[in-house]
Length: 376
Length: 197
Image 1 (tube, rainbow over the protein chains, first blue to last red):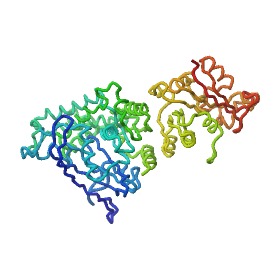
Image 2: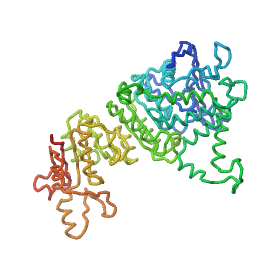
Image 3: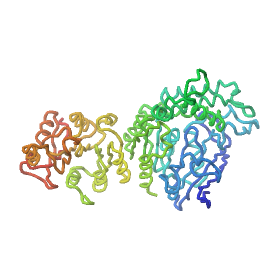
Image 4: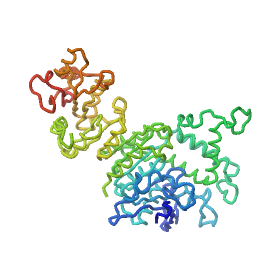
């Protein structure tokens, strides 16, 4: 599935798995059939013990590493972490990236055709949860002949999926890497998500979620992304990258772009609004809000993690205020309560939440060392 | 050390029951935990602040939790470990009494090792007008992390004051046990203690 081109670009081709067995979602809604788009890297070994699942975050997808073609500008979103000789070494592991259900990169989602109407699902696409994603990922694993993962790995919302894997399918994974995640959102996290959703839902072009064929709520999605982006960065990094720098050197006394930070955020918002589906954004933020494995449990997170059998590596970043190190420590202590093997690295990094996507020598060193100790 | 066990590690190993649950505060590169895992089949965890040491622990396959001993112990549950070890770190703690109490809150027993300030070579250097330096305290006065140095007798007094029962004591000089005049002839002290009930 992956091969080295003469130019040494690592070319990978996405594939699609079709599932016809109905999937009952946590909400009670049923998806009668669905497709998941995925990519694989490296080779599944003969004893099928070297598979690693990568779970993506809010705006991620199945394309975790390598390039789709010779002329791609950018590789997969976690290319600095995954590949031959990289911390998650595809010379040793068989790595799977999958676009989650409800996504907008090829898996069945709001923009897909609803077989009942012949039109795009739009707002009729059911809300899916982290639990539902894990169930669908497990079906993909079966489809690929993987009965057990050497590791399930994820950052941010992906880390929540990895954590959920350890609870939902405890015997399917040996190791669980939970990076820049939290055991559930805080009121502040939910508040940010709701402002983002309101930006989309109140866009006149939203049209109740049935906007395909029209312009779509690009203005709302742009605002949502701008807001989200602020929460992914730290005050420090914004200060050092942009500070109060002006684009034109002096105040213009108007509402156009003046400060560099405005220019940056608008650019990020525009780029995102062109490439992402607003319904998927809505659905992903709800999956984040709903995630709470300790919900209704007297024993809290420790009780929720009681079924877990995996060994864990947890990583957090010092300037991440979206999912602060204290949130990861909650996970660590719940695992200690359950006598799980767990290590925790708190990476000193200036970039806030987004640091988990960056190539930091210490962060990558710890992941590499941990992955190298995994027995196959 | 070169693969040969350090004498203080070997002694701690002898004191720890096989299969027990051990928390090593300030575990460094994880060498003690690795050895206890291999020789005593312990379930071990370390707490360490330094990045390079965390990496070394990960490379050894030792569980390690990054954090500051003075701020990050509160999340550990009461009596959740059989032993809590503080190896060559007591003298660097800002709040010495607090860390000792925390050890016995989290663990059923505590094990501490520290350089004995009462060692005759240290006394001699002070007599000669200088702050002491030795293999167990290899720092200059101006760059030492050691802010709360004590003698064997001082530590025993503190244990008495807090109702800690000393279960075992060993004093070493150059890796050899010292039986005679330990507060004068011993360079490194090792204590195992618990809360008196």
